[in-house]
Image 1 (cartoon, rainbow, N blue to C red):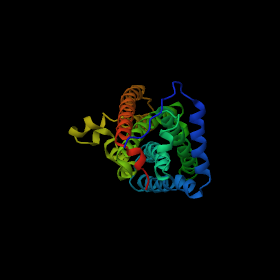
Image 2: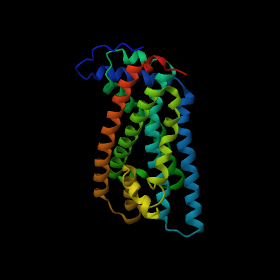
Image 3: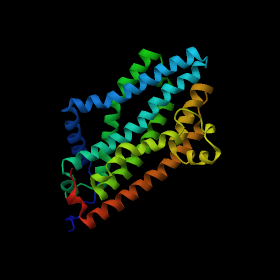
Image 4: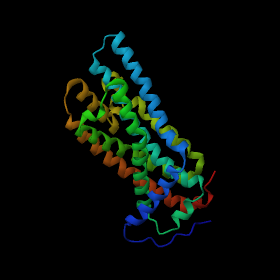
Length: 274
């Protein structure tokens, strides 16, 4: 059985994107458990690693600048993880409510759908991260905003990676149904050891280092350590991360369109739900 596919509108519509963003925003603000969840895990992680930093610097004698990289790494990692999760959860909301087929049969274009999910991933992320960054300042005296313009670059680069993964995961769920939902919750943890969040790339075995350098977040975390430890801004690392992100973002978008078309051909859009 093949889902009906209406003629796609030719112009990108900000109104349609705005309508979807408004829908997700109403859903988010009407549920206090969703709001609490956005803040809960970042706060727990920040406190855990923050107190570990205090112990590490007080009892092992490691320089405070090196210890500060732990909290910086936690906060940047949460941007990556929560950015992808915010994108995927907004998509899964449509699957859980059995509304995806309705969207795909509406004048909404895939690029508009993805744009709305990107906006919501940023909204969800900011709700969770802003209070946590304030807690880092109050409890541990670590001000991530002190990174200045570098923080904006780190944020943009990590969000691009998060969107690339989120787009691919959404395509997999679209094609294979909620049986592939587990990827939305677990796939980003594959990046945790390979992107060298808490330690330099040189810590890895040589045969794994080339894998790490193929992942854009690796350049961000190395750049963060260069600023906090050496007070050096590595623009070269940021440019390399940007180039890789553009490649992965394009690849993820192509895969999403291919998986969407496959879902339409196989009638998967009409078989979504819990």
